[in-house]
Image 1 (cartoon, rainbow, N blue to C red):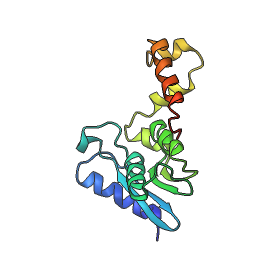
Image 2: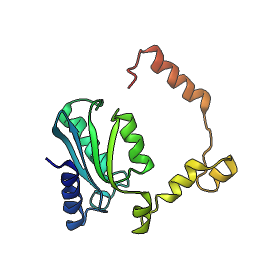
Image 3: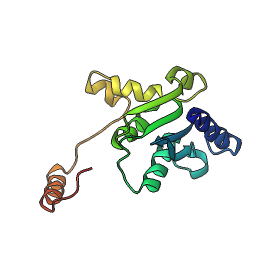
Amino acid sequence: MNYMEEAINEAYEGIENGHGGPFGCVIVKDGKIIGRGHNRVLLNHDSTCHGEMEAIRDACRNSGSHDLSGAELYTTAEPCPMCLGGILWSNIKKVYYGCNVRDTNDIGFRDDIFYDYLNCKSQDEKSSILEQTELERPKCLELFNRFKTLGGTIY
């Protein structure tokens, strides 16, 4: 089976139905597709419904685990920073992509602002893109300590 072709088919399903951009993804483990997804940002009115994120959610549901170790991901475009985070959190170690970041920018998607933020050298540069402020740290540390005291599961 051509897994990239399956990812492309997912993307076509999404764009032909007006769900979102041309981003499709499949996740494969032990020679079987365990997760599928395509961009559903417009359909769900949810900016996190990228193809990779949808496929990760599907694979986790289907496998009954948040840990996708041993799985491989096939996607029509190089993962954006959010999707890359999801891939890393789910323990996927191998990604195959079709179009690269430049190709994505060329059709009008604005991934460059995220890379600009991640590549900023100073806090001043970062704050011109996104302002972040530490707030109520002592109370949040109490929360963290409670989690630790309860022996919460680390994932």
